[in-house]
Amino acid sequence: MQFIRITRRRFYYEFFKRMKNWNSLVIVTGEMSEKEIEESTLGYVTDGIIHLTNKEKCKYHTLDGRNHIIRTCDNR
Image (cartoon, rainbow, N blue to C red; front, side, top):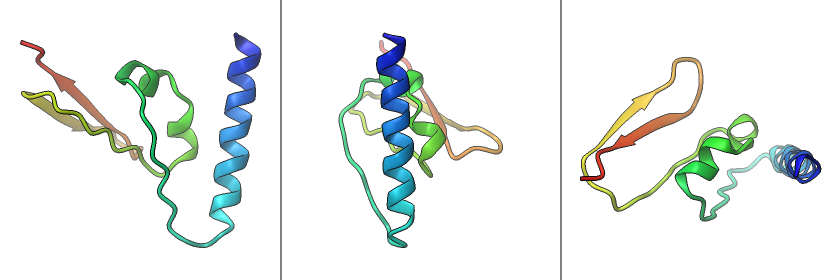
């Protein structure tokens, strides 16, 4: 499992490093669960992550010094 995680992290790093050399805006889309986003290393190599959901009663918080937004939802 650790090998797969290291390989995935290396792939993300190389992929996003090459995209920065394109000198253009690149938007990458995908489907990830909240848990996958929290555990992912993508936050370290991207400028930001936008998570869309259809849950209601959510609160949004920004983290100082980072481009991340923390979303907490009441699942009632």
